[in-house]
Length: 347
Image (cartoon, rainbow, N blue to C red; front, side, top):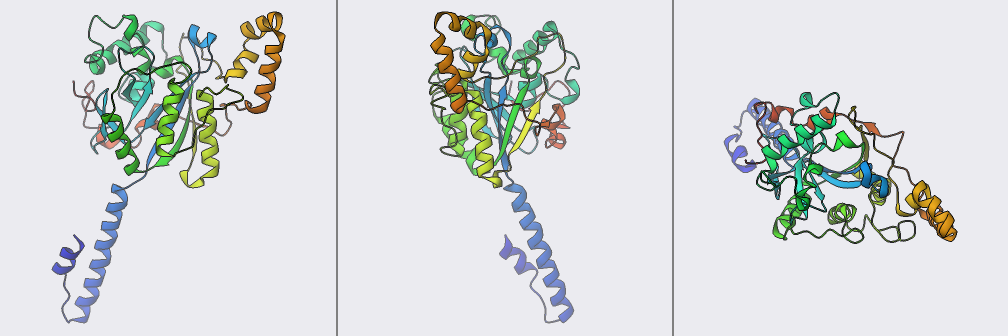
């Protein structure tokens, strides 16, 4: 491309023309460099840690971990690709326990957090009824090929609701670092090539393990299980802690800590995220019972927590972000999409 442009702008012997030629060449080079920079602009990865909620969150208050990639989109909830310039950027990818035979699913970031496509559509106040209605609309619009009508209440598929409206049920903490387009392309190739078959296991293949595997794919060795405080189980809290450590060791990654507030409403507020030793120590139903029947277990939990479990997701330095944050880089591309339509998944 450069040689063709330089050939067309070949200077004459005239001094003024020579100066004009040099100015044109310099301008063209700057434009081309800017275009290359735009094309190869850094992408980012955000690990989102959702606080525990509901009955299961009371019994096992470790929360949920997902990964948001802002340059990765999807043709379907189960097939990834690079985003086009004319569409909202990014999907949230997560492993689920009961989602038919599938291991993971990709949701558009706005839908994952708020079950709608545009910031202005996010409800100011959420009730259980409005949450169900928004999630059902999401299923009809995006998930019908995966969760057909009539199967949405079956037990083996009943976690599909976790793929939309996460911020209705819980507060989330985000840990964002820069990545490259090449890393995204390699990740897409690997994910699309491997079988998407359920692997979930609470100890060895949970949601945090999945998030850790993605982070380690991009940056090998970043996330390791906390053998002491978490008994070797990868937890969402440990993934967050590893992201903080990576950001401190690699300033060029430009770590950004985010807080995604829970949407106001009648739904019960989410609870703090715990590690394994921590929730045995700080959850009264466990600590009180163990103190009576096996007090040495409480002591062991205290020792392991003090030895390696003291880390809090809550951060005064976190940037509080709302729905607009996730769309700020895609407003121009999304402006041509009619209300209620989608250009992310083919229906």
